Length: 344
Image (tube, rainbow, N blue to C red; front, side):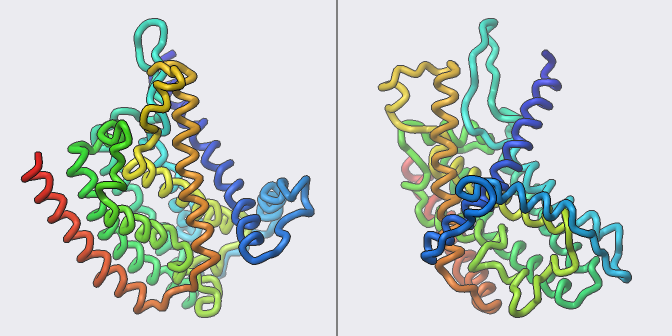
């Protein structure tokens, strides 16, 4: 089997897995929010309401696609495609497990695009493109509320990308690599970056909430102020793509944070105690379970915060990004650089 064919197969698996996870997160969000608010949650469609995401997809798929008469129809169609494509494309360099050693001695890496020596730069580049989807959606709809939502989103995402990038720079200084595999390898045996970069982790976590437009940073789609924000004029599966993109971005952000700060698939001493040899299928399945277990904790945190904290005002949002997180990120880099210089 050629490397191209293998990459396409892994890409198809990752794509479908991400879409299934996004649909599952919709169900989990309803369940967890019901638990927080002492409600029942979905319980009508299927056992325990498990088929509710499928019913939602069918509903969106059969709804009429309404486009405003004066909208820029080309960009109106393109905007949700950009949003979902960027959210899914980042997964190509995520490393949920190591590799399987084949009989001929070759290593079958689990990542779609393994050993990309600028993997993290690719993630930053792709997430920077994501702002175009929301901004174009607001502008192309020819609606004042949508335009305000798009402008808010562009200002918010650009502002918090700076803080996110600065937090990640400190991690890259410790790992001395942009390769996602090397970043995980530098955290082996429990030397996770969250213990050495607690401030950086908090900055990256808060910036991830803002980048995914999740509450309390959901100002681009604030219903009381903007009706629905940038996706006010979207219906049917176009709205569904924005909806899926939000949850896919949650999954992607959690996977990136797991890689940068939580050691990825690393668990100290446990694989050796269980007798799991590196390169075996059992070891890879164990690493996948560990990786997605850590991601699940962060996803629960995303949902928990949404149903706990109220939305910020816009001036509070900008103050937090520019006057708090940005200086903290710069200070964190200076302190990390001094420690690396004098200790190493």
